[in-house]
Length: 315
Length: 292
Image (tube, rainbow over all chains, first blue to last red; front, side, top):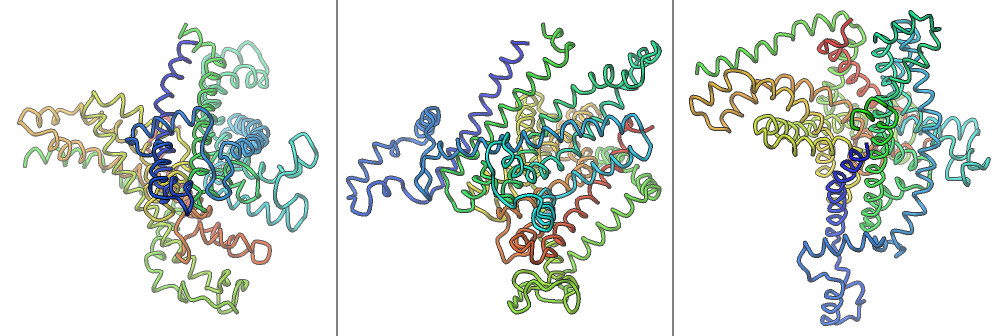
């Protein structure tokens, strides 16, 4: 188990390097020369040359990439072109709200999706099953921004139930919950479909297994058969698939943050790209990609923990 | 010539499911409706210059944000342009964008997949690369490429193609791996064909049918991603009509005139839904595990 995790950790290093290379290349396309900017309008050619040498800008490109890696490891991601604020600091303030939004969406969407999927699998071929299937097909086909816009238009504007924009404080405060509701609803609604669909498939498959027949033959109630025997096995692939879907959740978060003015990384990323703030964009992409790698790693670890069969096999 | 006949025969067996597919569609009314809708939309998009009642770039600020009805069947947008016209042209752009991206994605994906199946030594690293690409959020490709290459058509098509490529590569490798077992591959090698001739004449031709089918199933997802990037302002720049950016333009006036973004979003939804319904129907047909 530990060896497997270590191996996973090792194999994510090339991925991380690839991501960092993309971040580095993003900074290379900046049309202006940083040395010229630092020297100011009164800087002489010699001064500019001096600063270039100090910054390592005269080094070969591979060396520059190495310097870049060293700087990133020290937490120095450069400064924003727009407001000269350190990128790392801005990212730290934006990271919290994004995690908050994701947690607020997953916390209700995953259980509800699993519930819907399980009920659909138990009533296979009946009206409820068809409704859940239809709902999940619609869920994967609907543009995330439309869900957000509809909620904004009706729940926030017409019925005035929720605030239109922004974040109201930490999740445990009333105002915080009030503000997070609509973006979390948007993100959760597009996530329920895939979760329900995956759960349904997994439960249907497990319900056909021999040990389920054995459990029924022992006289276990249908409720017990489903919750104790079927779900425990079926949830393993579902957890993995949810982990894989975190990527699409991230995409949804970018859109939900943009629509509801949520001060997270997604909105920061889009804003910095649109305004050509390359250092900021580079930082956002790095954080989003690294966050994604970490989540995948955690899901893999969870996978081993959840399934005793895998644990014993590796040992 | 005789070697090509073998390839043709195999290709024919692969294509033999086609009449079967049509019969299946006739029994699945939802999939049939989806197919008809898609055909209609594609025809309407191609014929947009003929069908559109107005000019898509003809702004008229005195007529802006008119509700549906009257001269303008679906009303007007934020600049007073006819919304129906904008939607027709928008569907044209979005569908063309999706098509171009799928072509790029299938080129990348098929090359990787065939190379992995043909050169077994490359299989491990190539498929690992595919796994990594597959696991990455597609919206990140869009964001990163827009940041590197600037916002525009090029970075959009590359980003969409890159996110479509990994699953295509998997299908291509799986199909090619089974074709590699065929005797005519050995025969081709024995008569002294070069690697590139083997790949082009035998492998590619015999893999083409399933890969093309799979690529068409990817279309819905690509359209959805294209619309999302367009909505974020990372797609084509105004005044080009594109469904995602029409929805984004309408967003600023969502309280005054919701019809602009609603109409564009609804159209995207219906196109993607049709693609997915067709895809599901097809998957039910071809996946023996799902047949009851």
